[in-house]
Length: 276
Ligand SMILES: Nc1ncnc2c1ncn2[C@@H]1O[C@H](COP(=O)(O)OP(=O)(O)O)[C@@H](O)[C@H]1O
Ligand SMILES: [Mg+2]
Image (cartoon, rainbow, N blue to C red; front, side):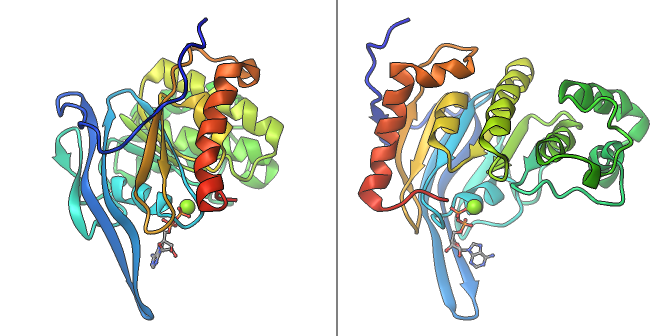
């Protein structure tokens, strides 16, 4: 293993990835919210291409527009200017091939774990019979076998979040969008979930966009880490994370890993605090 590479940020304004490679293209996207008390400029122009099968993490100070960016890609809100496309198709409403995981698991308390996972299928009007096996496989992978008939209140926080990840994946989306999915978990469970997520991603090679306020989580999981500036948010730097995969959790103690986290953290010393 070599540590010859310093963690050098690639500034966002460098040449965009060729369109043929890009799975998600964000072109000159801005977002201004209109509120009763006036306009809130959330995002300054953002240009970003995410390759097919890439794991991209986004970090940035609280309120800089990370969730806004994710909602734009998810088609849950529309850009004030600029365009977003997935697989060459402009996003104007929630696309079929996208799964989303939010910070809170949002499981329906009166439905079982399996029913909560299958909600994705029912809401999309897909045939439940066709996806029953996929649901079972995912629940097994997520360590929830034996809990299919349990209700959310019978599960730990980590189990609930794993169930909501199963729900995001059950229709086999090409794109997985995650907004601080592990923020509510304790440190040990969180690390386990990180290892689990890396394994799921390695097997499925989905294109992932993960928003996190944990710099180690971003470096551990991602191919590239995008650092956003404070609001109105834009891209301040992009780091290529050149650590071999699969990455054991022990990689977090290695010099190259620590150097990445230190370099990324410097952005937040410069601009104030990181999202907490
Ligand atoms: N629906 C909304 N209406 C008005 N302002 C919003 C809305 N959603 C977010 N904002 C504002 O946009 C800015 C960015 O918010 P958000 O994307 O949630 O940031 P982050 O996820 O980085 O904490 C914040 O100032 C927030 O108050
Ligand atoms: Mg947010």
